[in-house]
Amino acid sequence: MISKTINLTLKVWRQNREEKKGRLENYHAKDISVDMSFLEMIDVVNEDLTKNRKEPIAFDHDCREGICGMCGAVINGRVHGHEKETTLCQLHMRHFSDGDTIVIEPWRSRAFPLIKDLVVDRSALDRIIAAGGYISVNTGGAPDANGLPIAREVAETAFNAAACIGCGACVAACPNASAMLFVSAKVSHLALLPQGRPEAAKRVQAMVRLMDECGFGNCSNETECEAECPKGISILNIAWLNREFLKAEFS
Amino acid sequence: MNWFIAFLGSSIGKKLMMALTGLCFCLFLSIHLIGNLTLYGGKAMFLSYVEHLHALGPLISVAEFGLLTFAIIHVSTGLILFWQNLQARPIRYKVSKRAGGRTIGSSTMPYTGVLILIFIVIHLLNFHFIDHSRQTVFQAMNYTFSALPYVIFYTSAVIVVAIHVSHGFWSLFQTLGANHTKYMPAIKGLGIILSVIFAAGFGFIPVYVGFIM
Ligand code: HEM
Ligand code: SF4
Ligand code: FES
Image 1 (cartoon, each protein chain N blue to C red):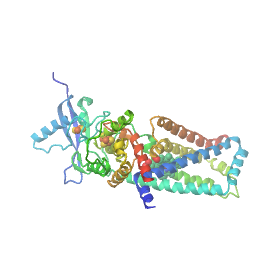
Image 2: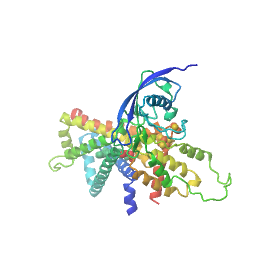
Image 3: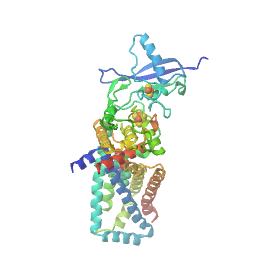
Image 4: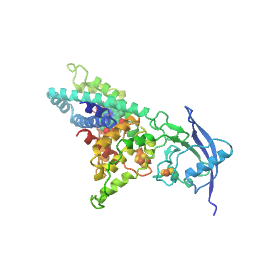
């Protein structure tokens, strides 16, 4: 069966490593199957560019199944596109119509310097994790599976927070370019579980301090992050982060 | 002491200052509104309220000093946050759409804030920094609201306050860490009710004094 195809006009942010300023450039995406993902659509355009000896559009990707957190761009003003709880690699072209013009821009944040075209440097998120987003487990025998009982609801809530893939969409979507949703997901994920408690206070202080140093904005509770997060991370986590931080600072 | 200064300088510390001072302003506005409602009881009742209020003497000075301090904290921290948040995205999006999180209130906090500040200055000039030996507050009010532009200005200003509070109220609970699936809908509802009460309660007074009384 031959699937339906559409033609699109793309306006893509192009900026070389050396360039201080970039610009939107026009491309035609012809005969795009609606079964393709957004990234496959860019692949097709890039094939074409390469054949014509032009520089292909640089974009980040890896798993292409919504679990690695590498992909992401702002599509017509919406982070990871307009579909709810989808990463860009999972956004399908059937959500677009023939003749559409699609503006594609990279994540915009002072803390995410642009590398090339749609690729930005998100290592600030890694540095925040390195500051405290872990538990220190010294080697020894594997613990007994039922040695640490955890209530089902607690485990579920921690797991929901752990679903964060570190894509940075929350930063991109936030009107203030704040990283609070990401940091809160990491803090909650560990602080909710008994293994994370011993280091909870130190962790939240270190992670918030580093987040501030990286040049992210401040949270104004605009809740755009929650609306755009591909993993549906709740702003409840931000409230818990605030609480953990206040507790840690005042004790 | 150093840890405290560092805490206040952190992003969450600054937000905490906004939340606590904002909460105090919401409480103040509620008390201020209850007092002003004595107007509907007539001139005698209103003047007796003013007299009782002023009879509190030093308590009033303490409250005024507190409010002024909180105002300085709220305004300066608010402006710092606004500035830092602009800096955090040096290159803006060419196309930017909302995903459904932002509201009129949340997207205009710094702007409504500055408008409120201008309003408060004018309001104090009209009713506070006047020669109280030559006129009662009631006379000053009658005089001010006999001019239509003032009626429009005051009523619009309290609507701006209401817009600020419509986001500010629930936001302050979120900042304090008091978000709970069970209670947040009620807190959000209360914030909207509070802003409507502020807008209607304060907003109607100039109209009442200027045209009806
Ligand atoms: C009637 C007076 C006022 C009331 C009741 C009030 C109340 C509040 C409340 C409750 C918040 C939420 C705090 C939070 O999110 O934790 C807030 C935030 C804010 N206020 Fe006010 N405020 C008033 C006057 C002002 C003034 C005069 C300014 C002047 C610039 C201002 C600027 C701001 C800003 C910028 C924020 C947002 C801070 C942020 O989340 O980044 N406010 N206000
Ligand atoms: S909280 Fe959501 S949007 Fe932010 S980094 Fe994690 S998965 Fe991405
Ligand atoms: S490429 Fe892995 S989440 Fe999109």
